[in-house]
Structures are given as C-alpha cells and as structure tokens.
Image (cartoon, rainbow over all chains, first blue to last red; front, side):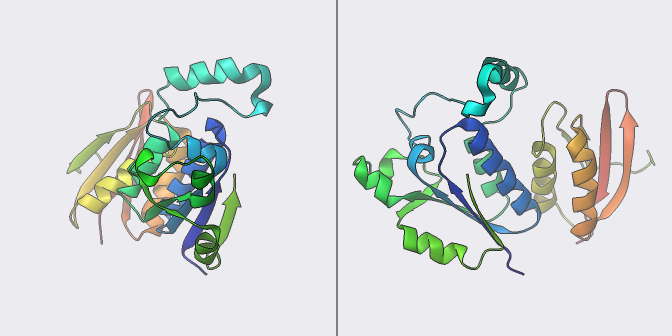
Length: 137
Length: 79
C-alpha cells in the first residue's frame, strides 16, 4: 500500500479548499506524504496579492452568508493556514500549475512561499501514479 | 488518573477538527519519549480521532476525561 496521497485543487471556493486541507491533515496524521497540485481558481487563491475574495460553492446557496459568518465567529483557520500548520508536522508539498501561471503571466514569486515550485502536469501525474488516492476538488 | 502530571498541556478548546489532533501530533513530534501530553478539546471528532491516532501510532492512551464543558485526552509518548 502506497504511503502517499495526491490532491488536485481546482476550485477556488473556500469550502472545497478547506476540504482539501482537512483531507491533507488526515493524511499527515496517518504519516502519509501529501502532494498537492494547485491549478486554475485554486491557484489564484495562492497569490500573495490580488487573490479573489473568498466564495463558497454554489450549493451553499442561501446558506452562504450564514456559513461565512459562523466560520468567522468560530475562527475556523483558513485552508492555507491549515496547510502551513501541517507542513510543519509532515511531508506536504504544494505545487502550482505552470500552465495556468503561464496563461496569466504569473511567476513563482507572486505566490505564497508555501508553494515549492510551478510544475507541469506530467510531473504531477508521475507523483500521483504511486499514491493510494488522488482526489480532484 | 489525575495523578499523572502532564509534561505539556495543549488547550485546543474552540478549535475544530482536525486542529486539536494536529496540535497533539506536533507536540508529540517535538517531545521526548516518556512525555505525558494532554489536550483539551471541545471538538467531538477529536474525541474519536485522537485516541485512535494515539493507539495506531504506538503510543499509550492514558485516558479520556470528561471535564466541565470540554474533555481532556492524555497520552504518553512511548516511541
């Protein structure tokens, strides 16, 4: 059984990003290595400056304002804070998608330093091929 | 079991899953064999997850204690 988990973060909605960071935490608790490939709208959330404001997935519907309020009141850590916390405990590697970065002419320095590198899809698929699960969020 | 004095106490009350467990794992990694680590939590998921992690990781679960309005999980780092 492989001791790795791969996550592809695609959505920039914070509920999905949080689901990703929580699954990554579970993997770290199980002493698994986590490779995270951040692309499209999720990649924009990794920008140091000019990240789009937080949104929830459309299924939140009318509950969205309430959920946002509760998360703030209960001081739920952001997905990125969770990723940073667990990367101090276990092996967590965050990679940005070079294709989307190129498309919007963003370079590595514009992203949060938690991002190790911008890599291509084939490099990530190579990492994911010996993972016990690969999730697309 | 109150006679076991913790080496480290983590007050994770108000923090949600997986926060308390991750703080426990961090303290475990930073600690020494024999350390007694206690975590306070109000998160119900932690009440199941943390003892399971303690056992699975080969450490000793000293106990889960109900306190007023929260609970306390105590472990000994055995490896």
